[in-house]
Image 1 (cartoon, rainbow, N blue to C red):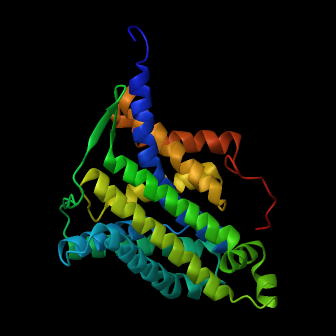
Image 2 (cartoon, rainbow, N blue to C red):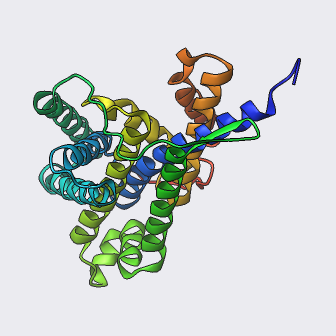
Image 3 (cartoon, helix red, strand yellow):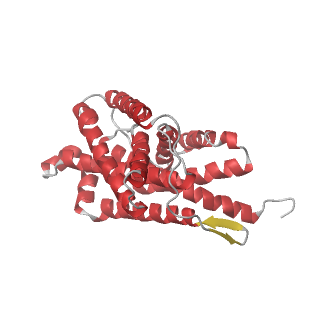
Length: 298
């Protein structure tokens, strides 16, 4: 289209943005689930995402486990890691002021990142290309099988977590604890168990996102969790933190916005756009796109 936007290029960037946004959505779900239950911003979540990528990497390269089995294995190991972090670092501070938990979360994030640098080495590692890439050109729009696998897996996991939260007994317990922890305890709900399960589910989703990023970009590093985690947190706030559909929507918005800025403005602004969106949302709808403003005693 001379003198205007090329429609096929716009569609191409939309496809790329949805693939990236699906990863942000998976990570954002962990943030929003934990916040919804214990009102904690788990800044170590991005580093669980990094560990999940490495769990999958070593499962594939060292133990020759196929991707279809390495993915649930990495998710399981990340779930255990998330539960351990909650029990050791956050549970003892459950009655402490929120600032103590927030500072602890930052400390756990730095600890995990530096342990990653120590044991995994600082240099990025190429992720194994276990599935040959196949590319299709559909009317000028290039779509790869890797993108389709990413989208399909991310959508399947998001649907699964939604079913768990809204259609299962443990999901009902999670929503009860989120609404009123003390009342839930009086009704016989083990709040500590529910919180542990919430951390486990969120960490498993982050690990899946880590493996998908490695699979898509063909590289991982011990510091990868910092920016991905921060952008996913922004996505959760944009959609409405504490709201599962909001995390999904925010993640997709972030992915599409980032890819469009890279394609049509400047790649130098790919990180800045996330925080520009955050500022706009906080100015005009502080509770997020799907959130509702509520009064809260502090």
